Every structure is written in C-alpha cells, then in structure tokens.
Image (tube, rainbow, N blue to C red; front, side, top):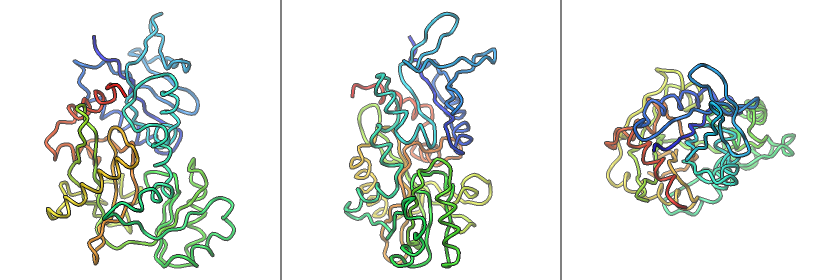
Length: 335
C-alpha cells in the first residue's frame, strides 16, 4: 500500500506565492509508485484539498483528514512546504505533534526559535569558527527611540530586517542615518513578522547558502554550497525572484579548507538547534579575515527547480525525487 502524503502549501503571508511554486515542483518530483500525494492548501480563510473535478474538499482539523466519496482519508506523513507562518514558525508542527502526524520539517520548538533571527544568533554565538555581526534587537515598545539606540551601538552601514520575516520582505540596507527611520518603519510594519526588528552591521564579503539534511539512514548530509552574486545592493526579494538580477554558482568556488570548515560549522548549527529534515544556512565569508559570518537559517527552504536546495542536490549527485524520498522516509522513522 502506498504512503499517503499531505503536501502542505500556501500560508498566511506574502510568501504564499513562493510556497505554491515550491509545492508544485515537489509534487512533480515525488515518486508516485511509492506515494499517493494530496496537495493541501492552508490559508487564513480555509484549509482544503482540490479533487480532480475541481471541487474544494475541506480538511477536518480535528485529525487533519479528508472525506472523499464518503471515505475518511487519513495521512501517513505531512510534507510541509509553507514558507513563513504557520508552516515555518512551529504553529503547524505543534498541531501535528498533538494529533501524532509525522512531518518532514524541524519540530515545533526549533521552528519557532529559528524564525526569530535575534534569538537564533544568541544560541549560535559560541560555535567555534562561526561569527555573528554586531546587532541590535528592537521590540515594538522600542519603536519611538529605536533609531537612537541603533546609532549609539552600531556603525554604518546597517542591514534592517524584520526579526521573524522571510524572503527578504521588509529588509533595507541603510547607508546613511537619514535612511534609518524609514527602514525601521518598513521592517516593523512587514506583515505577520511579530513587530520585532533586527539591525545588524554590514559584513563585507562573499555570500553563500548551503543545505544540510538528515537522510533515512539517520546520516547528516551537507550539500555543496551556492555562492550568490547579485547586481542589487544585497540579496533582496527582487534579486531572489526576478530572473537576471543574480548569479548563483553551485558548487561555490571555495578552497578545500573553507569547504571543510563550512561543513563542520553547518553540522554544529544543525545539531545545536536540534534540526530535522532539510534546512539551509546562509552566511558571509568576510573578505579581509576569511571568517564565516552567520546570516540566518531557513527551515523550509524554497523548492523550485531554480532554488538553492534543488541546485545543491543535483550538484551532490542526487535526483530530486530520491532526495524527497529520503526526507519522507526519515520523517516516518520512529522518533
């Protein structure tokens, strides 16, 4: 009998558009000889599956089941591909824990923690060979004098970003103090990001993104890194999703020593944060010091054909279908 997979997409933020594209690609790559796949859309209005006739079938939220032709279908595993809330911030994971449905992503606590960039940096700050940029974390109560606090503690230029956002939404590179108030307002007002803002000093260097996952044999696999070179000031939303603005080099041009050092750091990050499934770590390699600086971790990374993880999977020598099989089978292992 085939494994019944709920492929969960959508979400409550502007990242839903990206989530739909990721889910479409994952669905096209899943092994249909092993899995019966049911795309499930989660939105603020409803949770539903669309059958072959185009009819929306609501999800029973008591046990995450569907009623199809008077038959109740229960899933064996959830493949979460929602970027942002509620699929990346631990909310959906907590619900699945309560109904005992296995899923492919990190657990509820890790997912919630890693959506908070400031808290994540605090936990990772003492990992050997990993550095973090000087930063200030601002809460909504700090909004009135946030600019003053930043000026007192950090040196220009700054990166201003929502503390719990994704896809670089609400992010600004600030080069002058006059630009800071508007950048703070933009980050504070970004939808569904918790009204917390992280301001960091700019690190000059090369930017990389690198995936890691735990396979069905319980082995940690570090994928080849991707270097990001963009014509924009930084890797913002437009650079990520508008063709031609960014060059992505996979595998990245790193020395053997740099590759080994990065892999060790990423494994330590994965273990320290108690990650599950696949995650992606973004980092800078500072030009002058050759130090790796942590940017952020993404626990539900993009999965279009052009996204970093599929690029890295192919570079590693795996087919995407085999990679997604590893993730599903790993999720089904007894925890």
